[in-house]
Length: 323
Ligand SMILES: *[C@@H]1O[C@H](CO)[C@@H](O)[C@H](O)[C@H]1NC(C)=O
Ligand SMILES: *[C@@H]1O[C@H](CO)[C@@H](O)[C@H](O)[C@H]1NC(C)=O
Ligand SMILES: *[C@@H]1O[C@H](CO)[C@@H](O)[C@H](O)[C@H]1NC(C)=O
Ligand SMILES: *[C@@H]1O[C@H](CO)[C@@H](O)[C@H](O)[C@H]1NC(C)=O
Ligand SMILES: *[C@@H]1O[C@H](CO)[C@@H](O)[C@H](O)[C@H]1NC(C)=O
Image (cartoon, rainbow, N blue to C red; front, side):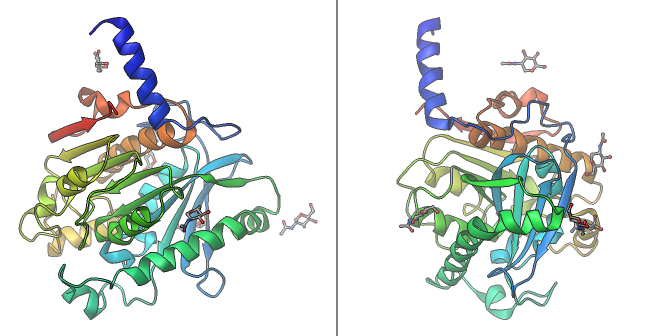
């Protein structure tokens, strides 16, 4: 390909994937390094916000892009279980919002979640409605709640630069939301996604990064084969990137103590010898690279697409960015 063709492709791609950002904090460091911002957390009770909410945000006063995250099992795995990864992402300049779908009896999911099969339709809509309600509430109140906690105004979570993110079946309601509303989110970060009813292809563009792990579909499996990362990739529209990580499983994204419980009892097949710090560093790296590109307007895709730089081995890597 000659240089002009490259230039045209590049510019076309950038205009599709990038949103011109103004006044948003931009992280110009290496996404695989720990972020430089100190992160604090804020808990919003269910009596305050529509859902119990854990927010991780940089302490430094600035305007930040926002990430809305739902944990596994349709959101029944509390966001606190992912605090290490969420905190690491926040340290790269994001207000990261984890929502808990309550009431739950952790760690036993409610019966209807356990027995729900993909033939049941409509069960999820309650979740996605609740998440939308939550998002609207946060867009109105989060800035003030943060000011209250910091005892200082000026820290702005900018919901015009929002990405959705999720783990496992937490992605089921998130896909629902994306299907119903084309404008609320600028990007989607799917970590080992699974959906019970994602049957029709996406009809509009929302850049997506999709992660799979080798062990998640192996016995004891926590993702049905062909309904996980590969299915999401097939259903999604360009631009999209997918990778399947070798030698890791479904629990490794969780905080270290939960991972060790999961690995010990093999709730999902896990790598019992995983170096969690290293793996979380990888998740942080791909997440920060993707979100910085899509929300902060600074191209860091080479940290994802140059797979020789990744701290893990891949079984599969595909991208479709020329759209
Ligand atoms: C990065 O942060 C994690 C905790 O979030 C910490 O455990 C780790 O030691 C840090 N790594 C470096 C190189 O500072
Ligand atoms: C939230 O911040 C407090 C105070 O710094 C800390 O003790 C706690 O562990 C944090 N919680 C989570 C879930 O990160
Ligand atoms: C909040 O700031 C005000 C004015 O600077 C100060 O008087 C007050 O003590 C602060 N409160 C807390 C809890 O830090
Ligand atoms: C989609 O989301 C945007 C931003 O949150 C909101 O303003 C709009 O009303 C939503 N549209 C629909 C059809 O719900
Ligand atoms: C990928 O990274 C390696 C190691 O830093 C570098 O040598 C190589 O040139 C990079 N490849 C591309 C296509 O940028």
